[in-house]
Amino acid sequence: MRIFFTNEKYWLDKWDEFVSSNNRGSHLILSDWLESYYSYGFEFEIGICVENEEIIGGFGAVIAKKFLFKFYIIPHGPIFLDGFENKIMLLLKELLLHAKKIKCCYVQYSLPCSENSIIEPYTYKNEFKRQIENLGTNGNLFKYIYSSYGINWLSFNSTNSPEELLQKFTIQARRNINLGYRNNIEIRYPKSEEECKLAYSLIEDNANLGNYSVRKFDDFKKAMLNLIHKNKGFLLTVSLNNEIKGAAFIVNCSNCLSYISGGTKKEKPDLNIGYIIHWEAIKKSYELGYMGYNISMGGSKGVQEFKAKFMAEAVLFDDPHYYFILKPALFKVYLFFNAYFKKNKERIANILKKSNKFFE
Image (cartoon, rainbow, N blue to C red; front, top):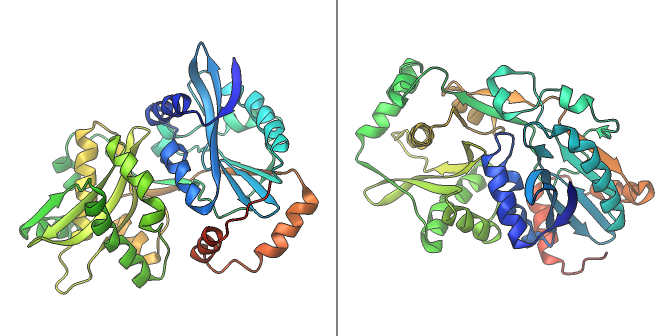
């Protein structure tokens, strides 16, 4: 078995296929997603275990650099093929040696472990962690790279069609879905940059109105367009009278669809566009033969209550985040400066983009 670190296209393509077909993978470690952090001056690479020129396990990492600080962040994983999970100790050992070699002060990874049966196919049992002699310290001290911490899972259970699932919803949810389709709506899947920018502007507008942050289109467009081109993601729009009333970006990875972000025009009367967006994603999940739909974690209290109307269950991973501080003195300096930049991620992103100096 070989363990090495690379960002060569040949291995990135093989890695993307490995992640996409692995239930325990995540869009967070697809190469296009990792590469999107270039807009902040960051770098990325994959660390992989290879046998007979095939990937049996590994991770995708963002190397976040700013001034004297360098952080090695694995947003999700490492992940392995079934039967090769015992290679994780060797991989973590090589990871720490590599991170020290490239002068990182901090390493963090996030294991998708849970004992909850509803997401069992998409996680490892906690026994997976117990075999690791040196897990590191539990916690997340670097929050500027989103790291996975759970799945908001709508299980299709024993249903064989969207119609069967619909009958299990509450009367209110069924009514709102049906009312939404009574309008003369049109579902579209934009693919060109111009179409995607127009659709995504609604998502950005909703974020501004709701006082929360989403990736700016210019920062994220390359990743989005590449994922769409590779059939690993899609933008969905709901239009009425040729006007976009709602939009959402959804990724297709690790044998499920995952909602990333969306937005709707706030109008009276309510057109129930939010219901339509998720119902379309649910229908497509059935078409693809998936076992459920990841409606995504997080959101305001109102957003979480809305997602719950689809019978989704938000399941947190069991203590997913672990870290190693490789340069304690330097990391303390980072923590001191970080105290001044906690207000919101958007401010951090703007500062990172405006600065062109990065030190090894």
